[in-house]
Amino acid sequence: MIQEIGYLKKCKISIIAEDTIDFDTPFWGRFGLSMLLELRSETTEMQILYDTNSSAAPILHNMSIFGKSLKDINSIFLSHCHYDHTDGLAGVLGEISHPISVIAHPEIFRPCFENNSDGIRHIGIYGHGRRELEQKGAVFTLSEQPLNLMTGVLTTGEIERITTFEKTEDLFTYINTDVTPDHEHDDMSIILNFPQGLVIVTGCCHAGIVNTIEHAKKITGVDKVYSVIGGLHLIDANEEKIEKSIEALREVEWVFAGHCTGLDSIRKMAAILGERLVVFHTGSIVNIPIEDPGKPIYTISTSLRNRHRFS
Image (cartoon, rainbow, N blue to C red):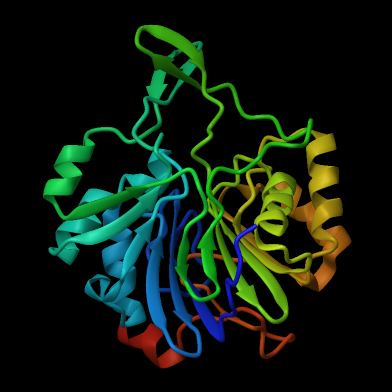
């Protein structure tokens, strides 16, 4: 357990780029995920770019609409290696144009591929090696252990797999020349600690949301989970995994889900969680703690939407 993690005072989470867009919006959507975490404790403020989508283009476009600059972020966090969370990294680094911390698991650069009936498809970091990204300004901190990022904020590190029903997909990697199943040990999340409980920010949650919740509780010593926000990777899950995931989420006050969660799983979650489940899109904003339970998620103002209508 990590001692003395302290509390955050406030956090704003903006969905910078995601698979979907909402009605009447100037934002660009694209398959993948990228979120901006604006964090404030009593003594410290920090901005973390959480994942970099499958392209830098929607990130650059949408950050401008939000009125934010990538040059103001303090760190980039990569939840895992898959291209829909990492392909935008090189373009983001080019826009920042100064050295910046990039936090990830030590296996982030491993080969990762699908072996389908119609061929092999590489889905990891491809086209940009570590050295090239470092030349663009990335200063990598690669750790399988939890890291304190500021008061009330830490990474999960590598997530302990304790359930039998949260199995990884049929993906592969290789060691030397030996092809082997890819167990996706690099899947990590960020934990925010509030007096109301933990907020767990997930990328795809390949480790499984139940494993992730239990791991977060274990390393923080906090039993209450106030919110989960991110992709939950239930899109192709079997009934057992969906049912047991929903059962665990019943103990969470707010669930904000999108990306790889899957429409069928969202429908089943909504039937159990009701208004405590909120689906996010590109351009969504969540303030934590939730100030208005009747409107837990919002977007930019009408005047801003009008201003960017023809951009």
